[in-house]
Amino acid sequence: MMIKETYAVAANDMSVAGDVSASIKRQMKRLGIPNQIMRRVSVCTYEAEINLVIHSDGGEIDFEISEEEIRVHVRDVGPGIPDLEKAMTEGFSTATSEVRNMGFGAGMGLPNMKRNADGFSIESEVGKGTDIVMTFNI
Ligand SMILES: Nc1ncnc2c1ncn2[C@@H]1O[C@H](COP(=O)(O)OP(=O)(O)O)[C@@H](O)[C@H]1O
Ligand SMILES: [Mg+2]
Image (cartoon, rainbow, N blue to C red):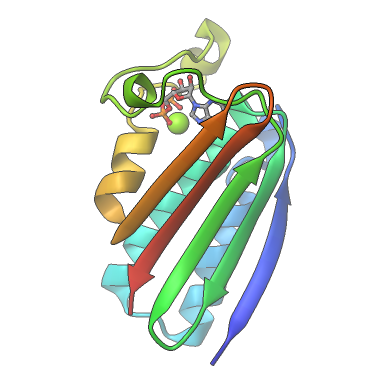
């Protein structure tokens, strides 16, 4: 079984935020991915998707399944993260008060992605964008 799908995530549009991770979850259900894995992939794709909406200028999420693993590749076109270590710290957030009032911006997204994925890598360049690869053993 080999599946690769690419989903676009638009910046700023909170009305559709969560739709991509919901589609990915549906897909995993259909394929019979074990619950324990599905839950962790869902947490990670949801957090990544929200970050694209509230922090980035838009991007894409690749969802890939092979025999050994699920791979989620998240990339955006900016603005990039100036201090990755800070961004990875629990509770650190640059979310606006508007976003916080909608219940986002607790600063737990990136730490939760790292915790829930079996493999996690993040690269970011200011002015260029952010690139995250998460893998989950099947
Ligand atoms: N795709 C992104 N583009 C730019 N900055 C980001 C992106 N993802 C995360 N960040 C930065 O890292 C911080 C921490 O992210 P996260 O842990 O998800 O917390 P939160 O989204 O609640 O602020 C964000 O507040 C933001 O400054
Ligand atoms: Mg977040």
